[in-house]
Amino acid sequence: MQNKERYLVFQIDNKSFAIDIDRVKKVIKEKGNSLKITPLDQAPKQVIGIAEVEITQNEKKLITFIDLRKISDVEDFLHEQDIRKPEHDAVQDEFKRRIFVVISYPEKEEYVGMLVSKVEGIVDFANGKNAIFYDVPNIKGVRDLFSDVIIPHGTERKIFVLRAEKIFEISSVA
Image (tube, rainbow, N blue to C red; front, side, top):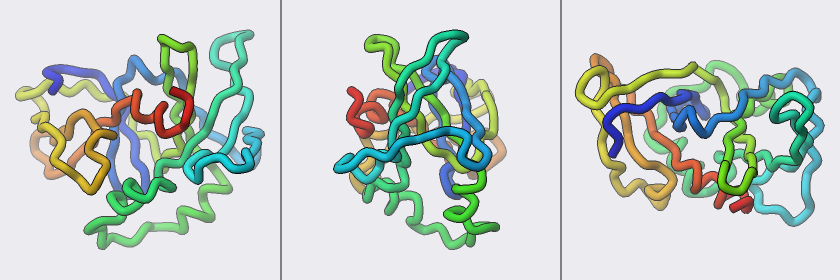
């Protein structure tokens, strides 16, 4: 469990997630079909496809894009006890404007893009100061996907901190 960290906070469907900001390479906000993602035959269902992305100026990499919602345990977790209705048709909206958080695996110089619903921004959380960090309870087979659960002071909101290594494993890059 961490004591103080800086995270990129985002949503997938109606749940809040975070990832260590040091692992975030960039956020891509696509309009229409501007990001040319090529689907891969026989790839796991969570793999959207691959695309060439400019990582730094004049440096392009071929990276894998994934949708965590397509993993059955995560899909069950995302919809568990969620009685709120989406404000719009997320599936239809996904094709109009997709947002990807590109994370890095520095040891291997690899990158993965995760499809997210909304990026909230960069937040500093300090355990005991502005939030409480909890160990992750055993949540329907996705426990190893998260490192902590953060509850910001003054809220009942739960932010699930993703393990970057697990994202790479899920994407078959690791």
